[in-house]
Structure formats: structure tokens, C-alpha cells
Image (cartoon, rainbow, N blue to C red; front, side, top):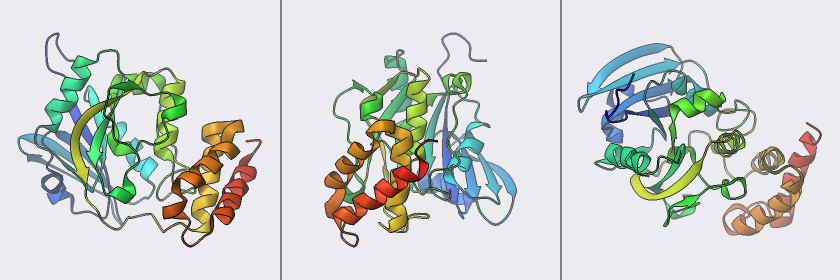
Length: 267
């Protein structure tokens, strides 16, 4: 138990696929304790020290990014958990920036941090500290999430096993997780604090803007927006058509999203 006046503790929770975990902490420039969950073709555990910090590495013969994140979360022991992926490289001093932000904002249960990404991947960049609500929560990736662990456990919040890379529906576990946090009363803010960057690489799970991509996005929008799903689908297509509708025309992409929405209506 943390004594009064002690500095809070941070763990980075890393989801990885087929990685050499013995070198991953160095490649990510980790400066804090971390739990790495590596999905591969075998089971294993190893532990080592990197920059004076404890790195716990679990390898499981399974797939699904939601499952990976839940496996890390259930093993976490720190005050603050920072979710991450194998392709994130942190800036020097990131741990202090994250903990300072939580100490400066005791009203926040959940903070969203900035990371540098390629232009095609950019969905947000926070310039001013602001409250996040259901209506503006859909743009943030999981690697921006830092949360007070006790708040998550008290609300019994975990990641969906149906959405995200390696799951039945190919994306959206991050948005659903954030929605659940807001639904169950966690106070969420975005902070203008940059902590690292995403390295450009070929995605482990992403297979392009296919029929399945748009159908799965429609399913996700049903669970995110309910009766507003169709309207939000139109908004999504109009906002991203230059990138996403090169192979599949805008009209067809929207029909595919509608098909996804209809497939789960009533659930």
C-alpha cells in the first residue's frame, strides 16, 4: 500500500504480437515498470530489469488485442496504468510527465495523452486541457490512455473481446472501453502533454479498407451510438472518404456500414 506523501507508481501495459520480449523494453525506451503481454505460438514467462525497472513478460498462445490488454490489466499493481503497443517509443521523462499530470489534476480518473503519429494515422492532437464526454470520445487510440487502476477495478471495466485486432469485429475496442469508462462515471480529460511516438510499420491486424472493415465499423457504431448510428456513419464516411474510399466508393462504403448496423439491431 502506498504511504501518504509517496509518489504514485506507473506501469506501462504493452500489447505485442510475435515479439522478442527480451529486447522490447529497450526498443520502446521504457523508463518505468511494465507488463508485456506477447501473443505468439507458445506460452512463457520471463522477467528482467531495464533502466532499473521491473519488466514482466507473459507470452500466451492466443490472439485478440482486447484479451491481451485484459491479461495485462488483471496483473497490474500500480496506481496508474498506461496502455501501450509494441510500436510505441517513449520520450525521455514520460513517466514523470504522466504522474505529474495526475497529481496536477486530482479530479481526473482517466487522462488522454498526445503521441506523435504519421499524418494518415492522426485522429486527434490535444492543445488545451478539456473534459471528454460520450459525444467526443471516439477519436482516441488506446495508447493515449492512462487510468487510475483502482477506478477501473472498482467499476469492473475491461476491454471487449469481440472488437479489435484478432477479434470477430476488426476495430473499436478502444472506443468501447472509453465509452464504458464514461458510462460508469469515470472522469476523463485530454491533456496537452506529449509522451512519445508511434513507429510506422505494417499493422499486425489491419487488412485495408475492405467490405469487412466497413461492415465491422457499422456494428461498432450500433454499440457506440445506438439510434444515432446511421447519422454517425454518414459523418464518418464524409470525414474519411479521401483515405478510405479509394477502392470502395463512398456510396458503397456507407451501404456496407448500414449493413453492419442492421445486422445487430435489437441486440
